[in-house]
Length: 488
Image (tube, helix red, strand yellow):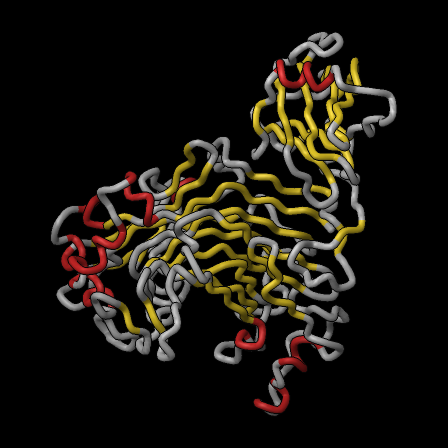
């Protein structure tokens, strides 16, 4: 939360300046799932501060200080919104509260208010109002977010919501990590999720990579291997075929949450360090149109952790740059993603030096991608859909259209998709051999049969860039402040 705790003395002083020329607008209160309270009022000309004071099941007469006292210093999407995910409000509890608004330099209050909580009330967010999303170019305008259907503030690590993938198969790019459920690699602290890669040898010891056996089949439901593809559940090390030298985490909501159409918003900081590959993305829950990429993939953000990585034109393609991409096509390798891909490169700073807001708005007509409220990509396939956009009938005559029986304009992006967050390392696709890295070059070639070994033998060059002995090694971690989804 961005609000600052209100000072009771200041509030009382400002209250004394109140006159009857302005009426504080009625507040809307609602419960936040799984825990918390939201209080909001509509924005309007002249409002420069909104303060709320409240207690749960306890009288709050006049302008007395409540158990919770907050100032909101800026509006968002047409509302002044206070959210408290620390307070527990149960069905039937009474919230006693009073409001204060600074309007045209004068203070106004509304006293002796109360609200009875009801979990059945469908008011999990401020009501929709017409507004234009910042950075949207001022086009036809976009409705403000509707009902909040997913709200993750990472006050705890909810493993009913976030399932760990357990596999060495990665994402099909022969990456150098394996994914596991381990608090060294994924944990929640101070309201943030950390996904941090570590060295496999830290757990299994020296010599394991070229002589050990990584067996992650599991025995109980909580630790079963989630993907056997690409030898994902068991690998043996040899002199030429090294076991995945990195241990990391990949979290998903496939069993707990998926959505179709809505606004997804994530505030996160990308990891910094050579050959790190963080991603926040979505996959279809059911593969309604067949295997990848026929049923689609949506990449909200991907980045590379290198500080000094350049493409063949000398442009930054490391942690100064992020990308958003949609993958689609009748089958591999027919993938139309180059037509639905955009990048953003910062002129100063990096995506690993501070938190940034990554957002996507998904309607029945198009998808829009934003970085810090700046629109970077709009995907509208047109009347012929993605089949026509990809020119697949022309490029591969006679192939079947997997989407021909759907009337949706956005097929295959008309089905429920679930969320994924992970930090991968290296692999044989995302880091092109044409890239140049300084001060040390890329230690493997993408077509090398010993790519994992070559990467590991370059450890003395790339591992120090992860800063493992500073800040608990968290410079190399992807940090996530919140994940929210609104139904539009």
